[in-house]
Each structure stands twice: as structure tokens, then as C-alpha cells.
Length: 203
Image (cartoon, rainbow, N blue to C red):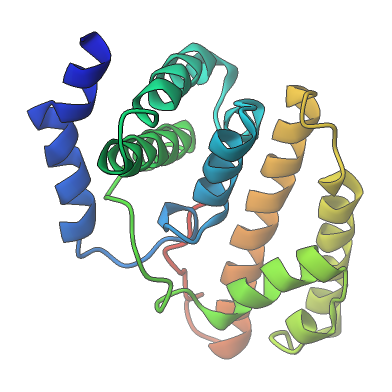
């Protein structure tokens, strides 16, 4: 009975609706197609909550573990319950991840149209290990060298054991710092001599 009330509660529905009404610019890890939600989906698909835990601090582990278990149970009720449980889990994970970075939660975004191309290029470089497309966004040799070095660090931590939360969080830290740096540095290259363009990218 408690599980059913959890799925049907008014607060649950309000949180879900508010996510789709948010009109703020898309932030990289705030999106339904972003890396945090992708990891959350994998956690639910595999039954291994560690895919989600690497995105939050140790202080938030219990909160995510408890919600994960409730979500797993709610998903069994019906297709609608599954969709609601999934979305609530996604939103909570993203919110706690953002809070851990000292950033406000502004709703889960359903489009990636506002993500700068350099971010897509950064993700592609991490996925494939090929830096060529990413380096096109930087004009200075020193900037390209720094991007290469930071990419190497991310790649060196990419293949971690999902059951090693410390290693997983180390990768997430390197990944988010790399994405932030690429976005900011790309803005500096495009606006040489002016204030650096800071994209609203949160990882």
C-alpha cells in the first residue's frame, strides 16, 4: 500500500510535471539524454544502483539507494507507474548531483538543442578516443595541448569497475571537469580579447 501511495502521490506528480514546464536553458547533465540520466537508466535496467551512485557524493548514497529500491518495486505495478517511478528517480539523481556541485536544480530538460556543439564533440572524443573533431574548436596550440591532456586523464579513468564507487566517482569528476573546461575554453577561443563565454553546462 505504501508503494502505491508513493507512485500516486500529488507531490510525485507535481515534480514530474514541473520538469517538463521548466524553460531554463539546457544544462548538459540536466537532460533526459544527458550522462546522469543514461546512468540512471542503466542502474534500473541492470538492477545495479552503483551506476547511479557514482554521480552523487557518499553523503547522498543512502537517499539514492532507498529511492532506487522503491522505484524498482513501483515499476512492477504498471506501465504508467514504471514511467512515473523512472522519471522521479531521474529527477532526484540529477538534483542531488547538481546540489553536490553547489548548483540549483532547475528541472529535467527533454531536449539537447541548446547544448553547444563542442560538448557533443567532447562526449564523442570520450566515447571513441578520437580527439580530432574536438580539437577543431580550439585555435591555440597550447589550448589544444591542454585539451589533449585532460582527455587522456578522462580516458585513463573510463574503464573502471562499476562496483568500485571511488573509481567511478573519480571518473565522473574528471569527466565533468573536462566538459566544463572544454566549454569555457571554446568560448574563449571564439571571443578572443573579450570576456570568456561561459555556457550553462553542469556535469
